[in-house]
Length: 263
Image (cartoon, rainbow, N blue to C red; front, top):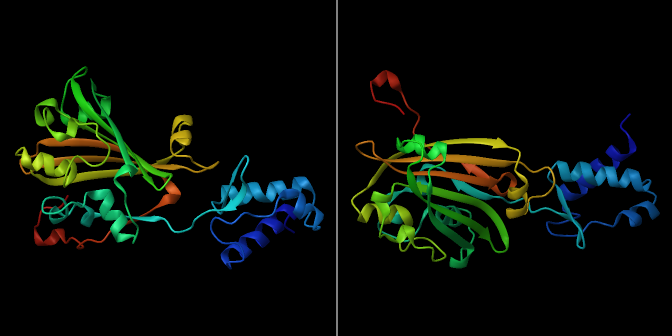
C-alpha cells in the first residue's frame, strides 16, 4: 500500500494531467489541503516535493506552488542550421527553434558579453590551440519573455573574427544572419558540424542564472563548426534547462554499405 503522501501526489498529478489545474495556476496552499482532510502538513509537503521533483510543479517563496508549463520549445536538429535561413535571411539557429515552435522572439531576449580570454581546455582542444592561447568568448543568455531558456558561449580564434560584428557586445544576434553569416562574409563558410549533448546536475550559478526549479537537470551541448577544409571556426558550449526544450531530429537514414562516407 502506497504511503499517504504518494496517494496525494498521484491524485494531484492526475488532476494536473486532466486540466483541473492548468499551467501557471497556483495549487492550494498546504494549510488548505490539511484543512480539507488530505493529510497532515508533512504529508502534503512530501506530496508537493514529489511533484516538484517529477517536473509537474514549481515552488517559489512569496508566490506559492504552481503548475509548470508543459509545452517545451522545439530544439530542432539539422534544419536549424539551414544556410538559407541565415545566409539569405535573418533566422539564426535559436530563432529557427522559435519559428518551429510557433513562438515569438524579441531582440532583447538575447544578451551577451564578449571578451578576449585564455582558451578553456575544451575550446583549445577543439581549435587545436596550445595551452594559454587567446580566444574570443561570446557568451549569450537567451530568454523567452522573462524566463531564461539557455546559455551559449562560442569561442573563436582572433584571426577569424577580429573587427567583425561577432566581437560587438550589442544585445541580439551579430547582425542579419548572426555569427554564421559574419563568418561567411569573412570567407569562412560553414560546411559541417559535430554536436555532443549530455545531461548533468547544474551548478549553483546555473540554477540562479537559468532560474531552475529544485531538482531540474541541465543539458549541456558541445558544438564544433568546420569549414569544408576542416578548419574549426567556432566551438560552442550551451547549457539548456532540461524541461524547456524538446530535442527533435529528422535526417536521412545512412547506409554505409553503399560506400558513402558517414559522420
